[in-house]
Length: 346
Image (cartoon, rainbow, N blue to C red; front, side, top):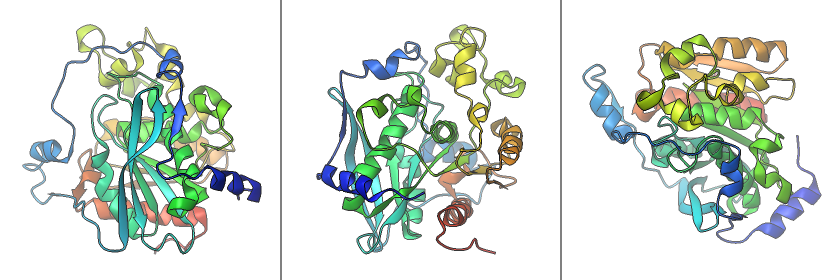
């Protein structure tokens, strides 16, 4: 799919340094479709450092993946990409320095943290390596469940995709080649964002914008595909003061919010127009829930999908070496093939 010349002209006319999508009034339209925020007991921050402390005894060879970039990558930090009244959400862009020579494909990276925790810096190492391989990579902040429950995070990711198209010329982005990826809760969010292309109930800004939020590919890294399955509910369907991270996002357990649990499950949106999906999985079975059934649906619909399993790895493996490089390699190979850039590596 190529964008029409008129669409690109519209994009060019929107380009202003620090461009930001405005949504008024303050967050109310986005939050109205979901439940009110549910108080969740605070826990340790979810990041590479805290996760490393939990894992290093069982995986003595791991190292926190580097965030530094070489001269081939330019980092543009703290760009406001959407504003809800006085509340601005930001992203960091990792841009190949040769992006001005020709448009590059882009990828939006969505951090994990159980929908209630985490930080965009989780994906800074992957963004740096994706940029080294020729992709403009955006690591984004989004509204977590204590601030705004489901489906606010989906609204935010779609807003980030739309923002990349608004600033496409400014940062050398090909607006016809944008992917979304995420890890853990971010993998589920990324997957749901991609499979709901064109569904306005997940994209309240669509009514006021001529710029598309659709993505052309999805990478789900150890994220759930079906909240309604028995296996998922065994881990996530808690009630009362033991409400799970997913339950807090939905505002209640499965019995109370069954429609939302189903609505947030990417597997139920598979069809002939679903973008190709790459699944990258750890050695932890609980995070593979729904993946096999979703792959079967994708195959039946004629949609390309691929599964890479990294055995003997912990959840959150993408935060660490030696596992980040194979994650990046698989992502680049998949997207290069999808976008017609290079043949997949052998």
